[in-house]
Length: 443
Image 1 (cartoon, rainbow, N blue to C red):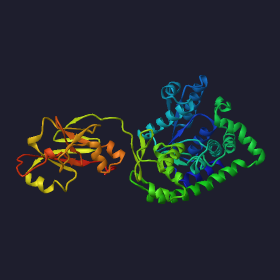
Image 2 (image 1 turned 90 degrees about the horizontal axis):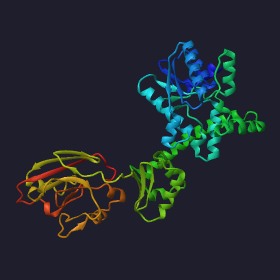
Image 3 (image 1 turned 180 degrees about the horizontal axis):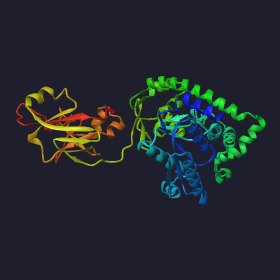
């Protein structure tokens, strides 16, 4: 019986308990209507969420009228959201399908954040699971692409995932519950419909129980994925340290590309990009690969992961306390004795002889052509060369800041002060600049 199967799924996968308020994503179709009816019959506190995407003219309005009437009859609240999906798709350069999906789940997130409910229950079922596996297999995927649709993803739950579409239709027929049919479900321009209407019926001619067989395979692959994830996590721990991936350690692994993709995929890198990065393992240092907000740079001994630079953040005039992207700078005064005692041991602190400061102090990223006379030297040196001598990788170089006055660079933050600004026993007024970092990736 469908109710028994749904309750078992809820319990086995800890989807929610009887104290939860379940917001059911209700389109009016057979799947979502059966989900709502089953949860209400099981005694769960429910409300409904209906999306009107205004994509099917009168049909969209018909669906809205149906779900509001159904909820009124069941005595539960129905929240309706209207979307300009066509406009959103055009503005975001998305397909209509992707635009509707984005809008739908964004609204679900908002409903959770506002406290209207505990979870959002969507009506994916066992047939959807089969279709998803076949679609992913056709497009190409890794192991996780063959594990179907998850029972739970944050606050999204799928109580119908173990129930087949035939069971759902039979339940609705037995209870005499009406539902609406989306006419686009019969249009083969949509990939999922091609599998549902054409490919899967052909597979059933070979094996009438093919949907059951595929769902059983999905279950076995889910368990295999758990073992796989544990093994990969152990290997990644040996290869990756913070934002650095050891090239030497990666070379020792047999499944190098798979391990690298496991680390980079969450940042938006696709398999082809991962393969490009792998080819750089034998290349000269310096090449950078980007995906969205992230970049991977091939350094001497590491692949370095960092956020993409969006350009010069500008110049900041220093106050007594100045916060910026990488931390906080605190200005104070101290004695020459303190400065001379601590200057060489405190990398995050600069001691400046105030007699030599010209105008205001400012913070900025270093620029090409910048130079200084590093502490302990007599000749000028380009900042670029100084950072190279300090063995800074390209990412760390790009994120290096300097403090200047109106004439010169005074301090390469956390690295070197300028010889001309050093404190001597004759110094009477010492400016102390302490850098409290919030970004330790490049230390």
